[in-house]
Structure formats: C-alpha cells, structure tokens
Length: 140
Image (cartoon, rainbow, N blue to C red):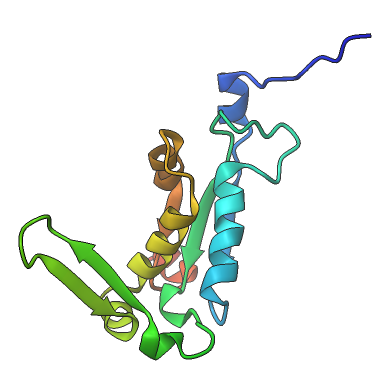
C-alpha cells in the first residue's frame, strides 16, 4: 500500500492562517524569537511543509520591556556595513534599545529564519509594537 503525502492547497493555507498576540514583557529575547519563528513558519501545524509558506500572523507588543540574559546588555552589538570604505556601523545593544526596540526583535527573528525566498513573505506577517496592545484600540 503506497503512502500518500498530503500537500495543502494555496487557498486552504490562506483561509487557515491565525493571529497570535504575544506580550514581550519580561521575556528573554532568544526564547521569544524562536517561538515567533516557529509560528511564522507554521511548524506548529500538522500540515507543515518546508517548501510552502503555511505560517500564521504574529503580533508582538511591549518590545521595550524585553529581557536579555548574562552580560549581553554590555557585550552585544549590532553591525552593519554600507559597502563603502570605512562604512562599518557598530551600535551597542543598549543604544539600539533606546533608539528602536522593535528592530532588536525583528533582527533576531530575521536571522533565525532560513535565507530563502520565503523569508520576506514570512516577515511581512510579523508586526512588532513598542507599546501595549490596548493602547491601539482606545477610542478618543
């Protein structure tokens, strides 16, 4: 008896996408980002297929209140290069958290995802906010 592999249809995947709301208050950066990556990739679903984008939407709030373990607050830095001579930029973790804490979570998640054609599609379903979720729905 031959085994049959089930492949979900593209419209089935779109209909079954769910929204996950995560509060980043007092959560460790690495553990939180692995949880987010698994939700974006759809690894928690029984119909997970590595070559298809079957993940869910993820909304992360309170990115300012994320924690980091050990001495990483002093030792960790973010490096980028413009491509020109002397174009290296090194930003310490503390300054990056002051400037834009959403970028810290975004970069952690982006670097955990595979570098392939699906990464940008998956990252479009990630929404990160500094403030609490309730602040967005208050009527004035």
